[in-house]
Length: 188
Image 1: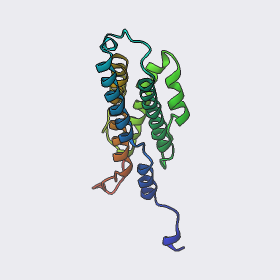
Image 2: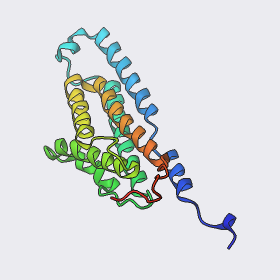
Image 3: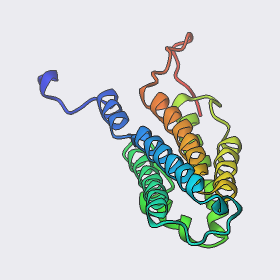
Image 4: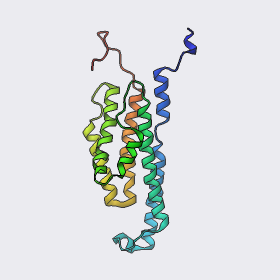
């Protein structure tokens, strides 16, 4: 059999998966636009700073809404990529990763749990404790609570937490195990 016609190698599949990771910069741009719009609205209506102007102007609401929807799209894309990693059985389906955010009270736990599973993948792939699962979950939870406290402008911290996880996933996907000195592979 000609090796040039064989199927894709594991490294080429994983490099392709890296290209399919979510584009977090779009989320940062949406958050920046939301923040600038929020600042402009507060400059025109100072009473909004004290939460006396409700509901917010439609343009501000829509920008915040689109930013949040894009964050959920990024969460979905991240889990799609993890579902296609050769040799890894990802315990969180992409649909479940998004829809569990809409269950009241459980969503708080879910914001802690799914980043732990992503950290579990990173550690499995890199064969080391590169990313501590509890820390990944806590980082996402703290980012979420900042969104609740700061409003739409705080959404950038959720994208920052997602960017952190996505960067680790990208590192894990392109990571190559160093050859062992005794000739044997890693034993799990």
